[in-house]
Length: 428
Image 1: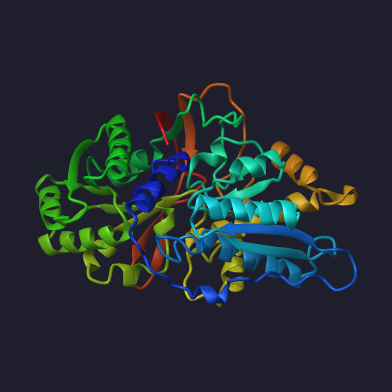
Image 2: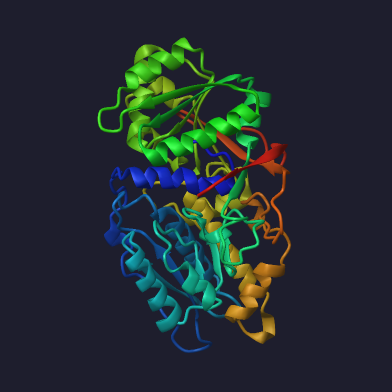
């Protein structure tokens, strides 16, 4: 699925989840279940944090675990170097099972019983407990915006930031806003003019396809829409038509399995495009296996996001992340973002100094800090509470292209791939 803007990422991922297609588990859940960083023996008491993940859910075991794995790797590395001012970080994990009931149970356990200082890298299919976290004034740092919670409640700080008032109502009057920087990039930097948008004849998929189409048209593209039957999709017919229409780009509102089928169909009919655009959740090392039957399409996969390419080992911060996670069987952009979320908490905790690491102190850092970049791993993230949404905004993006034998190859500098773009409204 394409990624029009950080705020719209939740809409994109919600489509995948609502389609209910299981993606399977890539890492055995037994590697992580019921683990926590051991409590420090003697000395200063540990600093306790919680990580809520829909590790077991209807859409497969590995879909949500990347941020958790990255955050845990950061805390393990931090503890091996003495922790925060000599105090270890004790990590409490909770799998909410992908349900609202399970999520509320995790919130109760971590916030009320375990008395965690903060939640970190939350990745929940149904963040039903978000209002309880906010009411308890527990900072939730660097969570993935699968739903609108991070644009609704105070004390919740998603990994991509927010400009909304976060007073208990979603965005502004129930609407969120996203930019067109992805479409602007491919138009200006890659010369694209015609874009195809592929969706299912299913309400959530069709709604997201309309949002993508709206953004593309705002950037002056000729848009070709292709809708396939959810139960019996004819991807070959869609591929043949987008070839006939001369599409330069392909965006979609379909699940990972459907994407693999679409790519195979594009190879079968000889459809040649500048880019088949995907999003940060699919920015993983499993591309060769996910798209094993479509070598041509696989090598025009492009991903966009708001964090530095996890393969860019020329960067010192990425090298440290990769060194700490070398034991994992796969790597992903979501792991890197989980690592950045844990770093964000650590920097907030270090700011507390002599007053002690408390919920209030950490929350104050999050509310009043400068735009945060996690040592250069993130496009600077900010939180402001604007009374009205912006009509235009300068937005930057990280871009990478898959190449067999090289993996994900960065395209330009994420801090200079920037455009002044309109902000378009949508309802999550």
